[in-house]
Length: 352
Image (tube, rainbow, N blue to C red; front, side, top):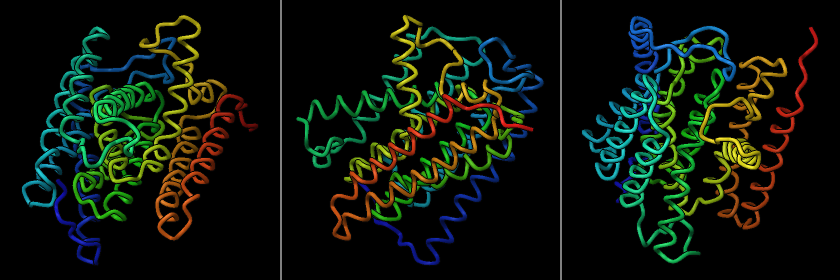
């Protein structure tokens, strides 16, 4: 159950800004230490024919990100600002996914083993998160099917988040947009302090990591970061849907959903092994056309900011007497994402 909101007065805003700043500074500091450790251990992502980078780069920055987020979550729980259940258990599941994913970063694990672990974490999360009185699918499905839909959606999202981490800055940008948007809606508008208060820490952690991961990246997130971040962000999005903000839960991650899903379906239609690394995502095609990682990730970040605005409009306009606004905002978000995908698919190098 949600804890009582603390309010959004000046003291509340100061506290929230402190959470974001502390998480950002802690992540930035920890990332530097983690980078030095990874370099000593030679845990490097070496370029190959499927890579979008040209120099060996430390892989495993997610260790710093998850350490900062988990520490912030622990402090928030200890202070009574974040409900222990389900937050503590879901953070523990996220850390478990991080540990397994780091093993995968180091020596590789079978795809089935990874998927099984992801499925267990998603199933446990659904059991903790879903409340029969607040169904995921807004009462359109019977309870058992509602739980199944939430499970499949969560499992797909955490995997697509991992699939999409392929160029400098893109995962940090998407994390920033989704976490900030979900927190603004779930906590700022709905007044649901738990679990959205943790979104403040995730927002700060994304900012701290982007200082190291923006092009040219000095460290990569690695599966140790992208898998648990996808899991925690999926949790925030499902919680939004439970708060009745289903349109925002679709709009916020719409670019990632579209790029990953379309690409996977195309690869499957060609008979490719969809779980293997590749360079056929829309954003990768823009980089191959000559655009820099920063230029592509910058457009993703700008689109993410616009999607945050549309998601807020989608959930506030109906309250103001405009029930059609959700569909209008969904349509606008779809057009915006389609335009970004078209640019990525047809991008040409800029003239000097």
